[in-house]
Image 1 (cartoon, rainbow, N blue to C red):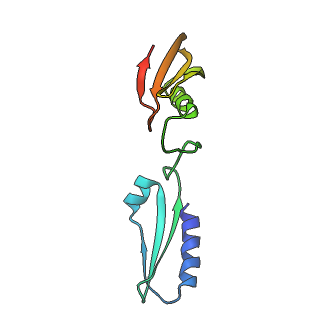
Image 2 (cartoon, one colour; image 1 turned 90 degrees about the vertical axis):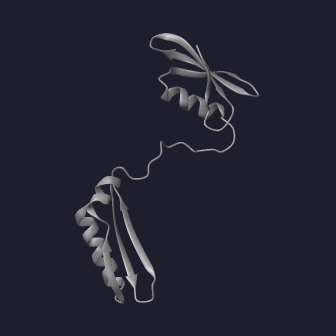
Image 3 (cartoon, helix red, strand yellow; image 1 turned 90 degrees about the horizontal axis):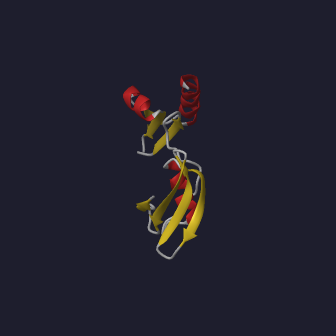
Length: 124
């Protein structure tokens, strides 16, 4: 990563011949966030920032986040994270979504409210 960052720094420095300041992010921040960045400030006050994300950067679990209500898809996803195996939607109502599956070797059901975040209403 350091080699790529150094190479990018050379390219950016060559492109910004009128740059007066070249500052790198502190090493502690780079380790904590898993990123490294270069900021170039020109005489006229324009900033150009180049960032490279490594491990620990912004991540998501590959699903599309939706606003609004808890969909059956969101409820299935959350039930899977709660430890349900072979989860399936058992019931969809106006105010709740019920997901059934196996957990710890037993049949289990969990009911989610149809509001953002899918809060658990009941678990059997």
